[in-house]
Structures are given as structure tokens and as C-alpha cells.
Length: 472
Image (cartoon, rainbow, N blue to C red):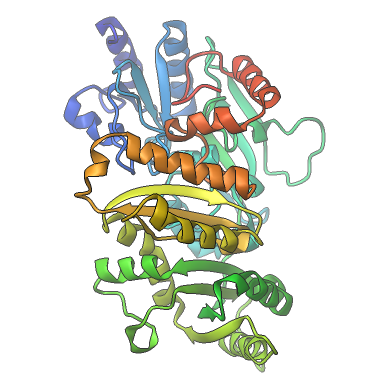
């Protein structure tokens, strides 16, 4: 689909390591994290902002469509090419520089191709970390393009809150490079243009470098599993924990019985922490933390958490039925195993939804009541960030279910879930995976025409060339 002269020109720009064209070399880039697979004309792997600009400029001038790809851990086909073979992938995986830590300013200037784990490994010695906690290990550019949240959103916020500056390459004929923001936390001198490129799936430009706000590493942590007295009391339990603990509360993660059971079945090394091995219908993983080292005479965090839980449990009409404090590494191991456990339970149809905090448990109760009559044999394995209103609403279908043979069954499921989530409960169909081919139809349906026209105008202004897996 791409003339050989273009492949040769890109190869000269990028060198042997910078351009992949063989099927075996491109396979991992063409295959997404959740069943999606496309066909790429090539994979360009620039190693600097200058190389990225040169590749983008050449492709725009010659009408070659590009799909930016970071760690390729997204779930909505936002970073993989379509099946036509006419799109090139622009991978960030070689954009590993710079890495400049400013300890006093508590910031780092970093290449967009660095993985989250590598960033935090390098920061650990300085007692700092980039505070977006995820089960996956994405690259920074993709985290910015999707505005990732994570398990500690409750305390630290999302990527948008923690990005201070960006270097962006626009998809125009010049491959224009924009330097947006810096290490300043306060700078009200006009439009904050960097926000245009956060959470918009790379359609307006390609992030190559970033300046990130860093947080002190927690020095003390305590965790507990909480069993609510009833699912509809979870919001009351959340408020009670916030009232008692204030900023100490760093995570409030919900886990359904089906999701926990799937993780325990898939990862034999996990210890079943529940009495008699009986998993509750719904359980909360709560975490509290301090960034200061322990002080003499100070109450340990485990004791703080136990006292708070005892006080909540002793209330009249308490929202808490049971609780136990345990080792943070064991409790988080179970939470982080949920995704893989659910994925291996059958064919997974996943949704990343968000709601007002008071509506999330009502939505889950409604779907669990309606599912058997509407889609018999589909198991709900939900878990997620109850503290910020997010839920990974996972539907598992037996792998041999004949309804999976055609596209109609999954399409009907998606239609129903999104209709209920958005129209009946006022939620969002994409909490932290942004827009990809899988949910583009719902962007068109639920985004007002005025907003779509404004977005299309911004796209035409910033990156008029064909960029991204979807077009705004």
C-alpha cells in the first residue's frame, strides 16, 4: 500500500533500528492488548524529537497516515492500525531521553518512550515517584495521550494534574515542534495549550518529551480489606473513611467476588485472605499512607487504621460488616492480579466506565439484576476505583459460546452497556482509555455537535495530516 520509495526515504532518516517492515518484526506493534489486530505498512521508531519531526513532516507531505503508539497497553484500539495496511505506526519506544531530575523543584523532564516502571525505578533513590499507579506498565506518552488515572487517583489525581510541560510534534508539513509549559507550577500567561494534547489520543499531536510533577514516596503504609454491610452502603463507607482519615486515605478500590475468584484461580501463588476461603460478594481494598518516616511515640499507621475501622464498625447502622488489616504487598498483589485473572476466565468484553461516586454501586446493582434476562451466560467481573467513581466493568463470555462467532453479540452488549451507563446513569463510556476505534461510534453519539465541530477545528489547526486511529 506504500510505495517503496517512501519506505526507502524513511529508512534513510531512521537507520536500521528505526524502521521495521518485516511481518515478524511488526507483529507485536500490530496486535493490541485486547484482541484487536491490524496491518501496518511500516513501524517508524524515531529516537529523538528531531527524528520524529522529520518522519511526521515527510508522511504529511506524502499523504501517509500515522498511528502514534506508546506502550500499546490500551484497550480501545487507539494505538493499533486498521486492517488496510495503509497506515504506518509511529512508535515512541526509542524516545528514552532525556531523564533530568530536578530534586528541589520535585520534577523530572523525561522522554515519552520511558516506561512507568523505569521512571519510578530511577526516582526511588531520590525518595520520589510519579504517582500514577497502574496494573499495566505503559510508556509516558501513552499515559499522557489517554490521561491515565490509576488506583491512587483519590490522593494524587490523574496525569493531567501532574503534567507541567510537554514537547509535541504536530502533523503538519513542517513537523512543527511545540514547547508547551515548563517546570513552573504557576504560569497564568494565556491559554494552557499543553492541556489540548492530554487525553486526546494523540490526534492533535505526538508527545515526545514531558515535564512531570513528582511526589514524595510514602514512608509508611497500611492496608485493609473492608466488607461493606451491603453493596449500597459502599458510598457511606467511603465518606466515613474520608471524614476520619483526611489526606491519609490514598486508595479505595472495589473488587467483586467474581473478579477476586478469577484472580485466585489464575494465580495459585496468591493467598486467599478471607475466612474459610469464602470470598465476600464485594470487598474494598483501602490504603492509608504517610510520606514522613516513623517518629518516636507516633501511633503506627496499622493502629490508626484499626482504630478508625473500629469506630466505623461500632456506629449504629454501620456501613461496615467486617474488616481486617494486612500486609500491603499481599493485598495489592491480589488487586493487581484481577485484570489477568478476569482475562483468562473466558472471552473478555471490557468497559472502562465512570460515574458520580454515589451512582456507581447503583449502576452495578442494576446491571447484575438485568444481565441474566438480557444476556444469559455472561458473567460480570467488576472491579475498580470506587474512590473516584471509576469501574472496570468486565463481561466474561465462555470461550466456546457460539454467540461469539459473529460481531452482532458483542456489538449488542456494547450498545446496551453504554446506553445504560451514559443515558440512564449520566456516566462516561471512557474513564481513562480515551477514544479508539472501539468507542468512536459512541463519541459521535454522545458528544454534542458543537463540541465535535470545535474538536474537528482544533484537529485541522494543529495536525491537519492524517494522524491517529480515529479522526475528531
